[in-house]
Length: 130
Image (cartoon, rainbow, N blue to C red; front, side, top):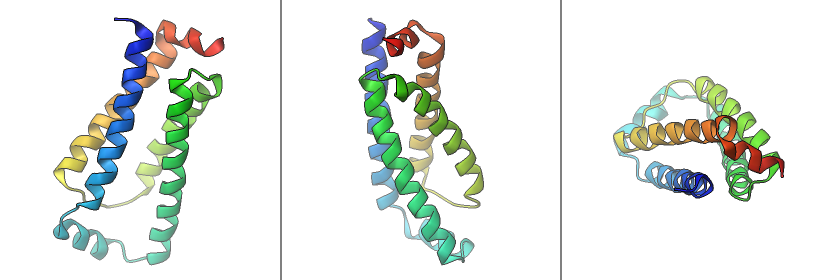
């Protein structure tokens, strides 16, 4: 299989995982919502985290488009966004999610790792310098 096609399919897989993750958060069980509400008492902090998450998702979607079109800024931006997401997830604190969310989230992190491998350790990296 052509490496460019495999990379583009990986980008589309990552996009579909993001959509499924967003859908799974809409259908969280009441037990999970109640637990998260009891653990996270500060409403101001929750609003701030929500705004940061929305900005992050928008930047991530733009970045996936840039990667799909092999734009050079997309490669640099993806590494920055990946590092930011790693640090941001550590700072979120205690949260509970449904098993489907955990599965999709794990697949999303694996997909992100595969994209990083493509970007820096395969001949795809040369496509971004054109």
